[in-house]
Length: 610
Image (cartoon, rainbow, N blue to C red; front, side, top):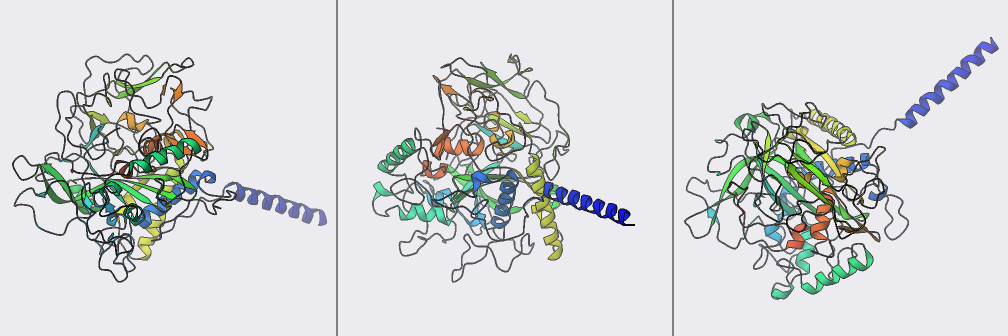
């Protein structure tokens, strides 16, 4: 009996140890909650100026994905009036629930100021007030351009100015993107009904920083027009010498305060079936057309459209280079006959086969000699191994219900042999959504579903949005021996901040960075004419660096690298990873570019490639 009891006890101990080990080895991921509070740090605690015990550099991809979802939920909470003020800027409603169908006004991020409300180009920002602690930030939306922009015709129904102002029509002069699923009658008065249009906004923190460093009477010291040259030069010098961002929130250098949030969003018209599906967040938007005969070359139209993409970037104490999260509506990627390529969480359902008309990346001299420049070209080829281009490519003339794009006709950005003569269909991502983001999507959708049931809300469109990826630490692929300059970045799990998945390093949104140069961005976009489009290059053996952090210079990729290249690079602009701050003033809204035999004709651009 004693022996038998001992055996039973021993088996019990072994079983307990086995169960405990299984629990330890299968720790649940970070919990995603339905909260109106925007998180202000990833992986706390973070000891500023002391020992780094947490923060973005020590976070896991799972933690970063949960952080991204918490941002998404809080920023898409219905906005509410601020205490003592009638308007709705940056504040979640205390009476509306997340996804509440009875609250049809703007969400929190939609009440951020649009870039022309921060950087008007001439005069003070609309509603500016020196006596207000927020310098008039809470004024209702106004979009002051260089011309008086009126409605496009008498059919335009008068109403309040929309919070959604779609004044961009392409990607920094690289390409314009379209949704084949949209029919030509889905958007009355729209000259390009399939075109996806964009906006950029920033929160109160950024606006106040710009306004308090500007003089309403001294045109030489107005950051909302352009940052003074002396400040730009001081910032470049600081970054070059220290290889890091200047201290946050000061006027001596360009360095935004912690808590700065910017968003970029893609919107488009919906077909009647999409509008009735409940799968899209819809809002009143304003878009622009070319007015041939009138007091200005532009006019506007207001209409109800659907949100298809949302970038969220936030500067935190442990991530002065910002944390970059990107989300999409789940129906973006479709086959020609309208079947979903991915499910709602991001799992690949129908991997389409590559065709000879898909643009491929070809690496010229993938193992360069010391000091030899490397070029990664984007061209139409049947075989990316041989890089033999198709001389007369058959473009995607019948995209069906797929996404497609047209490259711009800009010689420096898209020189031959890049495809510029027709539509290019999008069959899938260059880098699939990683498993940790898929898992976060499942957890977020489950949390949203439970919240809706508890609050007796039948459904909400947020169940049909998914995280594509999140970047939260700069990584320099050029200095890694296993990934020499000129080769595509590859990695193996386990993934960490300093060992990101390829889809994280090349982070891109399929309706915001659709063309191949942006899908595989890892450095710069232009080099001397005739050498092709490069996204991973050096000049005379000096690798291009676009991001500076912790005394290191990085050739970062994806969203982080592009913002660094455009907004922090000491050899270029000075905007502290903010492209709208680096660019400054905006004089004109954009209207759709017209196709030509060579590509897209150019029109005045808010943010052009530099």
